[in-house]
Each structure stands twice: as C-alpha cells, then as structure tokens.
Image (cartoon, rainbow, N blue to C red; front, side, top):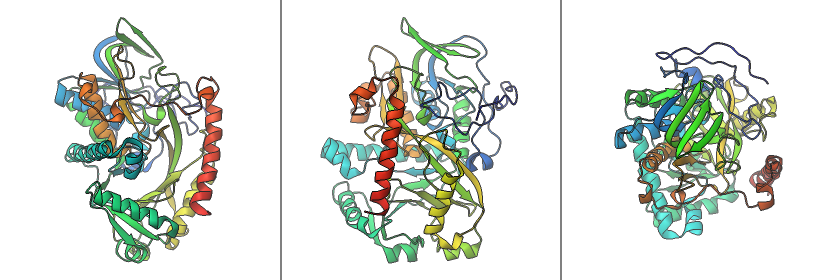
Length: 479
C-alpha cells in the first residue's frame, strides 16, 4: 500500500499533523526510510489516548545542536529526559513520522522485569553467575526507574506482578526449575502455581497447566505513557521535531550532519533509539544488526460482568504464556481483553486477515466463553530483536560520538526507561562506568558470515525466520 499525502504539518504549538496515510505494509528490511510524516497505526492506544500533545514541528532550516536523538519513542524521549534532568543537556529529538509512531504505540503495554528475551538461568549459562546477578540488579533498578518516571503520568498502571502461564503440562518441570533458580540464586520472590490454583484464584485460561508468578510487572496504557513522556521532555526544554526523517548522514570533523527534508541538523553527538523501525540505510553501524519481527495485537469490546465471571478473571496483572511464540494478554482497565502474539514474516503479508484470525482463534481457545466477541482494534508492529536475544546500549566506535539503545526483543516497555537513562550516561561521557556485557559490545551480526556481507541478506534472514517459526510451532504445540 503506497502512502498518500493527506495534510500539511501544523506549526509549533500544536501536534504535527500527518503528511501521509498509515502504511500497513511498511517493512524496515525493504523500505529505505520509515516514512515522512506518516500517520499512526490504528492501535487501541492511539484510539483512546486523546489528542497527541504539542511538539516543535518539523525541522524547517539548518541547525546546530549539542545532542540529536533519532526516534521519539519510549527510549528516545526518556534519554532526552535524563539528559536534561541528570546532565543538564537539552537534546533535540528527530522523528520521521508522528511522535512515538513506532514500537512505543504498537506494543502490548506490559512492563516486565526483563531486558531481553533470555531467562535468568540462561544468563548464568552465557555470562556466569556474577554477571547474571548484576544483570538482575540492573533489571530491578530499571523497574524502579520506570516506576519513578510514570508516577506523575496518567498511564493507567496495573501493578502487582507478572503471571507466566504454562500452556502445556510438559512445560511445568522447566518452569519449576526456573522458579527455584529465581528464589535460591537471585533471591527473587517467584512462586510456582498449579493449574487448579491458577484457574481458581487468578484466571480460567483453559490452556493453563500451572504458572510462575513473579512480583514485578505493571500493565500500562502505551499511548498515554508515550504522550506523557513527550510532555515531560518538552517541559524540560527538549525539542521534538516530527515529520523529520534522517535521509542522509555524514560525519565530518567529529560533527554529524543529519539531513532531513527541511534542513540539516549538525550534532556533536547522536543517540539512536529507532527500535524495530531502524532502517537498513540509517547508518553503517546498524545495518543487519537487528532482526525485526512482526507482532499482532487485538482488543475486544468491553467485556460484560458475566463474561468476566465466565473467564474467572480475578487479576488485571500482565499475563504471558510459555510458548516460544508467546502470547501476551490481560484484562484492561475498561474491561476490554487485549491479546497479542506473532504475525506475518514480511510487511507485505502483514495486512492479510488470517493473522488477525489466528489471534481470534487463540483467544477463543484460552477463553471459550468469548467465542464470537467483537474485535474493535487490530494492529501489528515491528519488534527489534538482537541476534543474541539481548539488548545493547553502546558506543560502537570510540572515535565517533554515536550511541544506540536497541534490541529489547519485546521487553522494552519497562527497560526502555532504564536504557534511556544509560544512553544519556553514554552521551554525557559517563559510559566507562557501565560494565555489564550489554553496555560493552556491539549488537552482533547473525552467525552466518557469508550472508552478513551480502547486499541480499534480508531474504535469507526471512527464510530462516520462516523455518524457525515452523519449528517453534511444532515444539510449542505438538512435540
């Protein structure tokens, strides 16, 4: 679907209007840029957040700035907030489309105590015990950072923890080992619950064979949080320029020349916070460093009390299941049910109705009482997955004042706040104090060297993803 012009952007003092219609087939491995003034995806969060806040309008002339942040989502805005609050630096944020247009208004709104896709036990295997313990402390600190940031933002928080539901009995022994590891090694108050307890005291997910409950986890309204971050950043003197995609990037004499349609921004330092919408052509340090994958989400009409009772919803905490291609779901404050999971492999295929139907079928399998319930919101978005399943907040080249925070793998709602803080530390010259592996190495390439150097790498990556999805399905549902 090609984007079409709809309106000229408004000037500063208002939320910049869209220039082009929402493009449902956008694909970061195919498109050279994420767009120019493209409208929001039709998510529940955008539909119910209210009008977007004021911004500073598009870039309209050349300018010199100390720090430019590329991307106005959770990470970019929190980095700008912490630069102002903790380092006295007022950043300029560049956004290709509308404010918080990408991951930050298309996710599931689940703030979990994680920073990537690996479990704590896997941290021990990969990094050793001491580093794993330090990563756990980083996540706990990140959750406190997040709580402090949102305390004055009306983002409809649903606190209480996270229920990780075993979707098949064969998963329970592995889940029990993880609970033991969390309790004994990490001193983290996780609990193992049997199927009867889950269905009686938490929620009657018909698939539940048991669950792990962890104490940290908060559901939020992603749109209201994004808009709250924008207001907070601008109140601190941050400039936010939507409809200003970086269409060219040169570094000369230590200064980054970021070319936008309205003018060139010359920055002494640049932070990249573009998530799953990172263009292959943005900068050479980022090409092929991420695997963007699609996630679908649907939201029902508000449930009646009898429907809530039929599903025995006794919690509004965030829920996920133990599939590799996991589902994330919860009962929202307005009694709608939200559920999300994997989607198509390519942007071209994403608009196909079958992917929404897959989620409808999954919803009905978990909650048969909701069969036939109307779906009022349906969308999809790109998730930035690092090839080793762990994020990086890093300066990839010591000779250049370029920094990035990327690769959360679907766990960025909470950790983006901490990543924004760490990105601000790097930009302010305090990166040497950050010693964890996620702060000391680049996002890795895939482990297929011949493909990495190929200009035609993306199709091979997608073929591998297709193969993995089928293997995951067999492992999740059949084997």
